[in-house]
Length: 239
Image 1 (cartoon, rainbow, N blue to C red):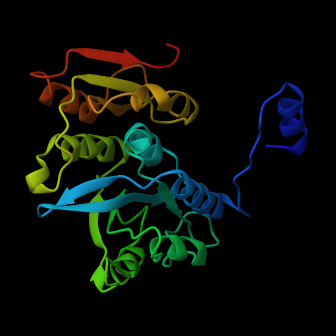
Image 2 (cartoon, rainbow, N blue to C red):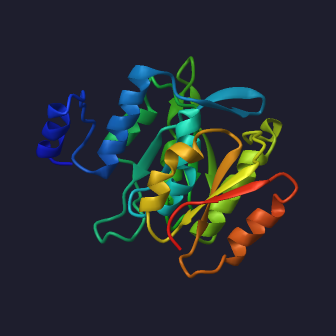
C-alpha cells in the first residue's frame, strides 16, 4: 500500500498507522506484535489448561489463512507465516528470526501453536523448531503444537471446523457452529472481505469451494456432517 494511499486517507481525516515488514512473513510478525500492545492474545484449552494460542501457516498460499481468518479475528489469535525455500514452492525448513522472536517472547508467552496445512505447507522441520521453544511462567514449558492439515485446502478447512466443534476437554474450541460461510478457495479476495462476517461469532465457520460451479465432495461432507446444527449458509462472492 503506497505512501500516496496513506496520504489520501490522512487528507480525508483518518488516522493512519502502518504495520509492516520487509516481506509478508515479517509483516505478519509486526501485526502480531502490534495486537499484543492493544490486548492479550486469545487462549484455547489443552488438557484442562488455558493456553495462549496463535496460528501458523504458509506464506505462499492463502487458502488455509482464509479458512481461519474469521476465527483468528474473533478469538484474537494472530496468524504467523512461514515461507518457502528460494524456489517459491518447497516448504521452508526454518522459522524466520522475526517469527521465532514472536513465539519466544516472554511478553507474548505463547503456549500453543496451531499449524494449518499438511507438511507440504508447513514442514516437519518447522514444527520441530516450534516445539523446541519454551515459554510458560518459568520459561521451561515447550510450546504445544496441534496440526490441522488435510490432503488439500478443502479438507484442511473441514478439519478446522471439526476442531472447532470438538469439546475443550479434547483440546478443541467447544464451539456450536450454526452458520457456514462459503467462499471461493481458489482466490483470496472474497475470503479476505468476509473476515469480519466470519469472525462475528463463534457460531460461524468458513468452508471453501473450488470455483468449478459445483460443491466439492469434501466441503459437501463437512456441511452434511453438521446438518443437525447448521441452520444457514452464507455464500460470499459472485456466481
